[in-house]
Image 1 (spheres, helix red, strand yellow):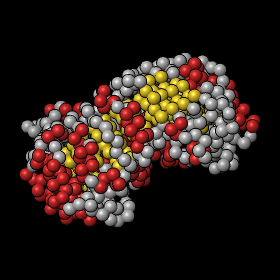
Image 2: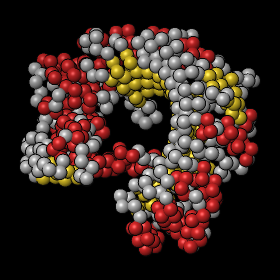
Image 3: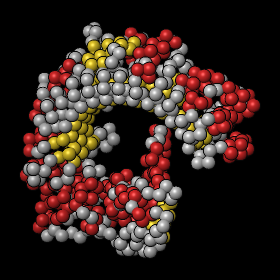
Image 4: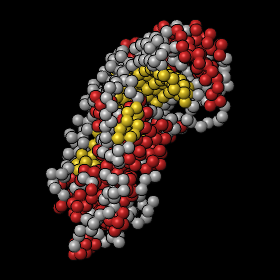
Length: 475
Length: 162
């Protein structure tokens, strides 16, 4: 390759060109067909077809152009060449066009193996055709514009492994429908799947798919209870809604919703939003390795305690990563075998060194990595001076965490941060390898001054200093 | 791999020397294999050559160094967003000629992120272009006979050819 030589697209292998094509819409690919003979062949064998048209953005539809191209595909494309992805999101104003779109989609399904189907807007009509799509592995149904109340069709798709449903309202039993229709389902994402507000029925969401490994529930509210009972589940994410109609108008209170989890092989658990009433059995969290909890406000201590009581994994089990974000209060839990701990707290919590140290660190014995990042760190005036901080740190029993290898610390109080580090290093954290300090730029000088104290510490230690990258109010 | 090495030196196809940090080099599978190989241990002075020209290699290394911290440790969402913006800026500076060199280099060095980014950029360039514009910009010869061309025009009445 010489720097000035001109590379033509023709120099690229078929694989590269097809990869470029995979980023293009059908209408662009249809045009490329007229570029050269090689392109003509490639366009027909492209691995994915995606078509999106929003009449709001451009009133002129390119549907006819697309129809002309798609018509040629079943005739010209090798029949054994499967289609990786069919993505279709359009709601053309012309009902005739909508019918023709459905026709080419169905025709492709009849002629080829299709792995993934992604649909937006056109939900109700495509629902009826779902049973025809027998080879499908991934199905994504998204109604972004508005929730539409639908009747779930009776189908059976044994090949389906991933289902993603978004923006659907139904009075049918979603959980039962999923487990009956897709017996081999491994990954399930339900976003904004709701019971219609007018409905007087009290429905439960019961997930019982036996092969399920990964489950995400986001803003699925309006249910009386959520029950997750599945043996193979490895990852569970639960995003409670904070602002939906049901919640804002007080139709459903969060602590009225019962969330029941029974998943003995769960390894990763993420919870975001206000806590519900959590039910569990002792085996529910026995394999848990990683937990992330965000946005729980512990103004009601009972709720907080109850939740942490429920996920008492730490006592029982093998939890090794715990991330706590946006918390207001601090629950008293014991961290047993946690090896990675990240805490992002609101500043209110961070007033007192003692709080952090006694309530957290003395409960940790096997920690490798510790990251502390209070949220509003540099709006807060310095609550201590260096000597106080150092005195506090000296009181702490550092021996317990002498295996600590990495520390990442962001704090408004530089004195505290430095004292913290000196305390740790001089006392007993001899295995410390890396430290990262994130601090406001106005602390530049004091940081450097106090870091000199550290030089006598462990020789293989590397210390990274970085000012915060977020821009906020100056301190 | 010797742990004392922090940066390695490689030669471009034009014979210029470049330094690349170990963590950045790990983004590429072939380079990673080289790292594990003997060629970067202390007692060996042989400098490996990468079959990519200097102008392209500068860009490739720039990309690697930027992406290495995130690839190695995993980062928060805000970092990911910032990186995305950086990627867009990074690709803006390129004329089509160097874009293709980067694309080939990314393919040759097995760098998935850069490869996808370059393919996406190339695809974005093609969007909305007429057939003759695409031929001109990407240096593609029209090998259709005039009858075939006429037929294509009839099949795709809505599509702009000139």
